[in-house]
Length: 108
Image 1 (cartoon, one colour):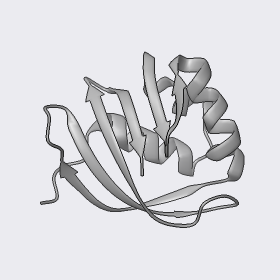
Image 2 (cartoon, rainbow, N blue to C red; image 1 turned 180 degrees about the horizontal axis):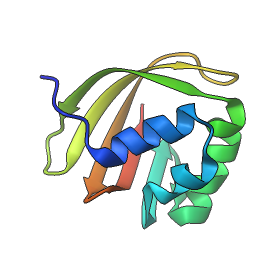
Image 3 (cartoon, one colour; image 1 turned 135 degrees about the horizontal axis):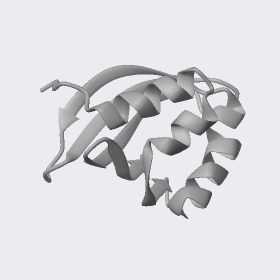
């Protein structure tokens, strides 16, 4: 079931597509975690590292296919179509949001 996309996730998508690194990093909580197929990044510096090597640094673009509620409160499962100089294709991103910030992101 598609639901309204939370602001934190919209910011993640929009700042990636605009290649706005400062705005992208501001979308995450200071203690956020990002798990990209088992590679885990912690905090702002970890997210910044991943962003450079796997996201904006690869000129990634996301087209949202679907947003659904996850199993836990604040959890959303987002299916995206990714293009750029890195991974290309469909992917699933499971976000946990707190307020307007991404608390955790698991990419599978």
